[in-house]
Length: 187
Length: 442
Image 1 (cartoon, chains in turn green, brown):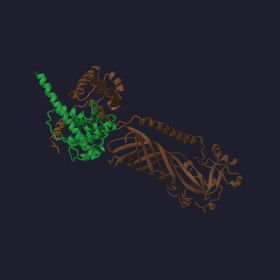
Image 2: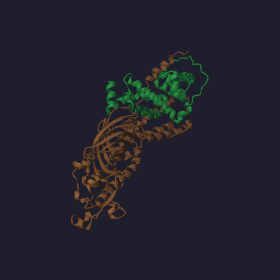
Image 3: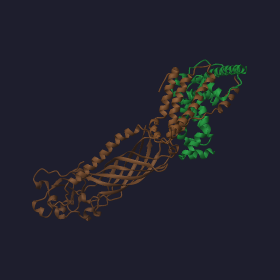
Image 4: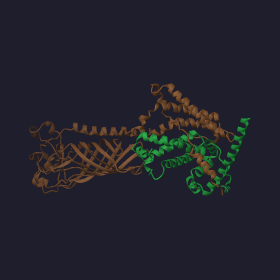
């Protein structure tokens, strides 16, 4: 489907085109929202708010980049705003300036499935989870993360290092547990 | 320094992460994008609309009532100066003018999920009545609900993967999902997507007001020589030659304002049709001389009907002893088209052009009668129905919960104010600021 025509149709108020655009991106965008939240219900809330923003600001899309990338940025921003507003996440989003943590140079083989890895990322405390998602998955620099979250660059680095280290530890433990479980089942 | 191999692997895997959102998400998005007007704006609006209608009706009744109750003084049969009447001048019919702690965990999650389901589905209860009407059978809803439950149960079980890391409270998550799924499946059956996909352009109501200055064509003294008198010269006892040397006033601009009810309907993305009803007040100032009273001598009743002869009429001599304000009250029915010039969300601009039909409800205006050399009132020489052309440039101002448009306006009366060509071709020209207030979306 030609995104240019799809956007033009949406801007004309064509409901069918709006639904096509939603159906095309909703699945992957719910994946994005899911990584930032702690439940599927919250993720759907973010998805809903995000798509409302998309349709209300579609006239600002200038076709310079990928439509999917543009929508994804809106989803990420909406998710971060949601975390900031929601009291459940707020307490864990109070970042403390810590000593710069050395980043573990472990690079374990990520043998987990996509959903297993996503679940592990979602077990990180919200602050770690957000910074890990922004840096490792979205590819934002620590300077950009600092601006987005209103924290110092060093804080972002430090929190990311802790998150990475924690996640790698969990991946290793999870992989070991899985291996033992399968060994037990074979017996 | 670490190798980004881990990050790359995570990124690749996360790109593949997809879920199927529940149908209620799209329904809610569609509702929001369709721009449903906020409910709480409606009571605020109606609180203002009722007084506005009452005010307009009261003003109309007042002016209509005054007109019907007043005896028409068609032709005064005699005039006598204050000194001749020997005392205090008699007055004539003069001018009138949700929240929970982080690890509140289990119960908190249930409460929040219920609250969110409730928030998303405010209309479920209302829709239940429609469901009973047979839009969709209960069994079908139940089936969909069951599908939803399986789907949401799976989702709720996902955190088990890392169960050795945390305590997810699966039972409560399931309960929350079930409550929400039941509500969502009920709503899913109720809303017809085809109805929501059409852009809705309903009639919208608001208020309109404006204020500025109006002017009339100059009441030139030269008309005194050529004017056709609208009353017999013999009615006046004053000598015309005596007053013709006196100063005849200019008609000067004065304040004008209007207020009323405004209705609009969008006909396309850029064009909007609007109409309404408003009460428009015009005024002009002039200098007049001494106030006189007319009365009817007994002998004159033989010449004129008694009913007419009974009412005294105030007239003024020429001069500049006092300022008199001519007031006109018009009930106006405007019809206009509005064109949106730009798509700026913060500062949209609109160009409006249209016409209006207005009816003179009341006036205290004095007109110079060249035959007698006096200023006097006469409703008979006024064109009571006026047609005006209007144009305005409006700017939309962002304001919480209310749409406001304001900008300069020019209105010109196509119909002459006076029905006698000999008294000068006078037209109202109003220039001022127009203000439109519409409750609802931005």
